Image 1 (cartoon, rainbow, N blue to C red):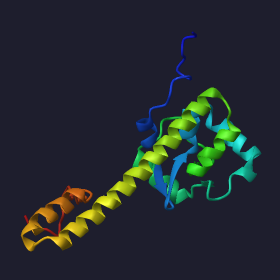
Image 2 (image 1 turned 180 degrees about the horizontal axis):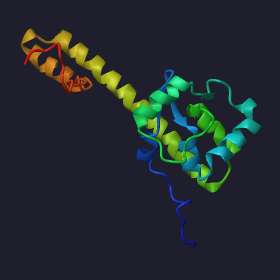
Image 3 (image 1 turned 90 degrees about the vertical axis):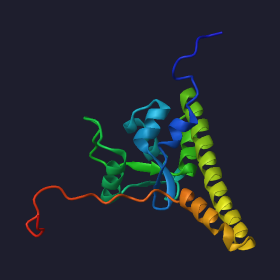
Image 4 (image 1 turned 120 degrees about the vertical axis):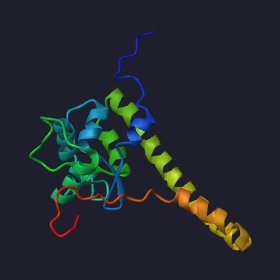
Length: 178
């Protein structure tokens, strides 16, 4: 049996999940991160898409606006030197990623595509279970006495996202007295 190369190994679903972003109410992946997973350059991935644009309607793939791109760069962190492109990146929805499998046919692309589909499904299941949990909690709260209100409030607090901390101003402020 032949030794497996890094290109043949399956892609961890957790690795893919960290690269799914919410933009325009769609869960999407960046062209550059998909290219990395598929083992091709971003330019070659985009060339393949351009040759097959009829397969990628707006709900499968779209180009980010300048504002979306800057917001995403802020969220992800600073890009590495040499990764800046003169074009705004494309992003692909789950359907667009599935369509990429018909455009990119290497064995590595097949493995990456399977991992990406699993990650999208897992995210969808997690979101559904969170909504289901919130619904069940509301039903229980209506059913039981006010004596359990403290418990329900504590559970809701645990389910809520952490509050954002306001940043304290640093430096001299002439309007404030010391």
